[in-house]
Image 1 (tube, rainbow, N blue to C red):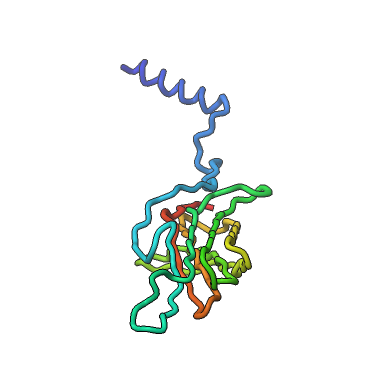
Image 2: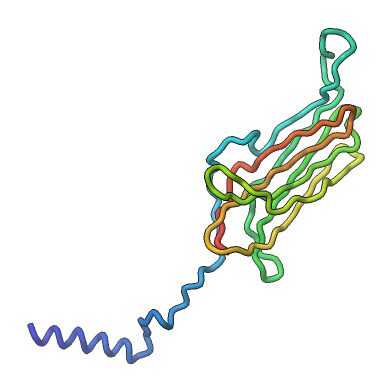
Length: 180
């Protein structure tokens, strides 16, 4: 049995001497940027897409048979993309409207970071992408800079300036868990 013990020690010392360093002092423990989509855990409102419409009451007791206009909102899941050598959290929000009386209209995109216990903080909010047509889109890339694991989601708010001014919102279907 003594011979076997010496062979194991001799083999380990040969590996270390051959350049395989097992010392933690020389290891790089810096996490590499990475991300994964995770299912949403809460229900703050419509997910992915929704609609909102003209809320102008009709002159009589009954509401008009059909609204004067209707707007459709869409928000994409957060994406982890590399741009100019840096990692970003990318989002897109769209709105398209039909009917008459909603112009101008447009979406606004907000990136939120999860703080815990159901609390989300706005990290960045874009300005409204106003359009005098039936379609508007807004895209944004937020530079990923943080420590540890964090979760993000996108929220799209849609606005129609028709009388009265109306709005709707939708939340991304998934969160993006990232390590920057």
